[in-house]
Length: 403
Ligand code: HEM
Image (cartoon, rainbow, N blue to C red; front, side, top):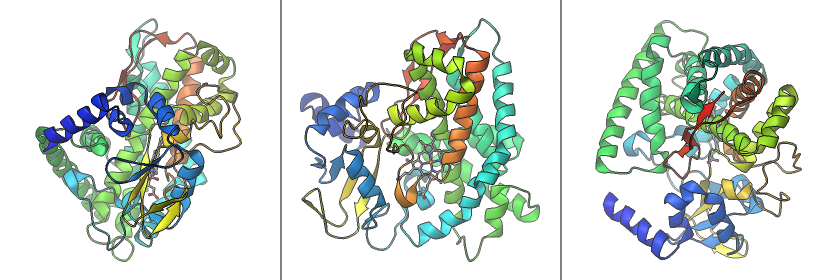
């Protein structure tokens, strides 16, 4: 079955040049933006071969993400996806369940809490960069982009240091499946990883029920009962773990990658890291966002861009395309950290599912870029970048550099 699906995608993509299929193949991994440009010519809303809809338009993406006639779950009683440990909790729920669970985790990301994480993020970045010896070649992903978000999210959840590495390993396996299951053996590995991660979390829940601490898991187990229903806790924590590091690693990777591709921009950042790190992060989020797409189910019959959308049909919102929509951004393919757009990018989505971890992701990326620019202004490439084999999540898995 999986094999037949993959063959079908290859035929549709390479032979029929069908863009939705091409996005899932190598051309989509190498340069999805060229494919989005082709798709843009089909108008602001186009049918997909699977009987759904797709949009590359910033305006239409924003409308769909905000319109309450659309939902993250299909209409009708909410069913759990459950496949291979990929139940992504309230990310895949509609109100009122979405509202109830989101409200519980929101306080952990308040401006005050985020300001409190700053010293720990700074300390972690400095310690990671201390390990990179002068003159040496190193992989920016394994040296900085990956370990930073893992350290931060395990700390925020309250995972004991001794277990952090195992949480990260199983979480990465499950997070990698956001782009789909590749083979039977991949499915088996995912099932095993979910079972291991589940057991690790269960023992953490036990610990925090007995010995509450000042962390998010303690707050969540204290809310078990009315606010967190039986069976909801594990997927909620899995969502936070995976969302916490599967995305931020790519933001840092994509930022350094784009900056090294544009030496004038890297030089500008190094001349004023304090002032420009935030702008460089914002421009990366627009230019090369870690989450390239999401989608919404129509909850009722409706009309969009003059076309009839039936309940249960999905509108795929191509965030990566929306962020380069020429209607909204002049010269959208130009990476320019001095850009001050009048319209927000959609890298963190929009509407009620707008990324709850956004301030934390930005804090980590800004501190990482600033420290790199301050400490390693001569940073340059030392080999070819290798991209992850995925199309929803975009970022390097290996980025060889020399300081
Ligand atoms: C650069 C880093 C990040 C990016 C690009 C990103 C992107 C996104 C996007 C696009 C969504 C919404 C998906 C949709 O509308 O269907 C989302 C939701 C979410 N993100 Fe992030 N995220 C990042 C970092 C984080 C971090 C660090 C955390 C937590 C520690 C986090 C936690 C969440 C959660 C819990 C949701 C679900 C929100 C809801 O459904 O109401 N994210 N993120």
